[in-house]
Amino acid sequence: MTVLANPELVRNARAHLRGDRMLVIGVICGVLSLVVGFALAHTAGDAGQPQRWGRELLRIAVYAQALVLLLVGGLGCAHAIQREKERNTFDFQRVTRLAPLELTLGKLFGAPIQAYFVALCLVPAALVGAVAGGARPSLVLAGFLVLILGAIAFHAFTLVISLLAERDAAVSLAVLGILILGGLPTSGSALLLHLGPLSPFVAATVVGQTSWALGAADAPVLGPRGPASGMTDVFFGLPVHHVPVLVVVYLTFTGWCLLAVARNIKRDPAVYETLTPWQAFGFALYVNVVLLGFFRWSFWSPLAAQGVLLGVNTALFFALGLALVRTRDSVRRLRAHGFGAIAAAWPAPYVVAGMLVAAVVPVVNVHLAGVFGAPSDLGLAVFRVALCTAWVARDVLYLQWMTLRGGGRPLLLGVLYLSVVYACVGILFGTLRLFATPQGLALTAVVAPGAAFALDASSWADTLGMWMVVLLAQVVGAGLLVARQRRALEELAARPGAGAAA
Image (cartoon, rainbow, N blue to C red; front, top):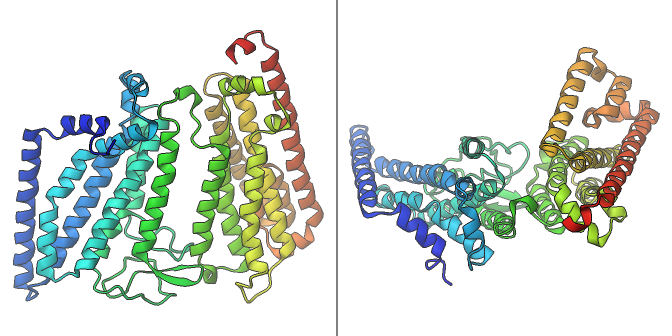
């Protein structure tokens, strides 16, 4: 079955592209294009810059297309599954003969189809601006490619949100928040990565470029890039143009999102599993390849660079642990296979393995590859990896144990309890100024091991024994949670209804 013949796509097209609606959209877009073009041409003519209005019209048209595709199309995809669940019509789609990938693609291209039509109506204005402004055709085509692929990637991500979210308002707020952050004029990762903005709004900058030539590899990326500055990223030390980087990132990210949706869209919502453990592990490694490849090593000291990369992986693998937490129903289904050692420690083994691999690679890169001229403390770097690994394992084990205990929204309550504890610890210890001394920093780390990110080489040498106790405390805490989780599994297995449920 071709994509155009997909029943879900056809259903959305018939609902959103009625003749009268298309006529109104076309007229509105045409009138706005004429008015804006006339205003720009008149202003540029008075200023003695006859070609400037064309480039400005092209930029505005592409930016408007990006806004419509991301806002209208993103909201359409974000509600594509969630509203079907609210209306109790999603079960009818789950039992159709469409394959999971076919149903996913139908929603991916069908839900935002009205936004695509609006963007199509703005193409004539963009082409007129390109011709009048003397824009380079290859860069205009590259800009449209970036725009389309970026919109598809964003729509695929919002489809994941729609699959997992439970409430309509939460879906809308999530999409709007992501859109606002992505539309900022500067790259939020400029100090972290030698990589330009990843938002599809960058297409408006691409069409305004005058050359494909690469700029200097060490050029700043803090602000918007002008037509003459080039669009150069640095991947493992090699300068590359930003357009092919965007294409690869958009395609790969879309693939991960489609994998998550397609494997769950026809399953019961009670047994959703965003990704399998190995797929989630692969996604974490993919993120680390991007992070390491574009990392701005020259901006950081050795210890700070390792801390930044370790912090990102700590957050990443905590999110991975959240995605792998099993519900009571899924545990009952696994009862037929027995509850082994891995089940009692779930999901810590996968999180620990991934954390060690992802966090040790930057340490090896710093100390063996010689990316820095200055020496660094290898012992401190390895210790921080071990402590953060034990920390993440402890927290995800706590969340898994909370889920096995049952009750209303146990996972949400577990995250809430952790957040309250860390907030109270930060306020209390900050008031007592424990973070100001090496001994106080070690004491705070018993409860909040994130204090290790503020540890320097001199403090580490002075309080080595205390920090070893901190590491031991995290390991002991994780072990106690494994024991409690094993007891919870035994209680579930001993219940009379467990066999029938399995």
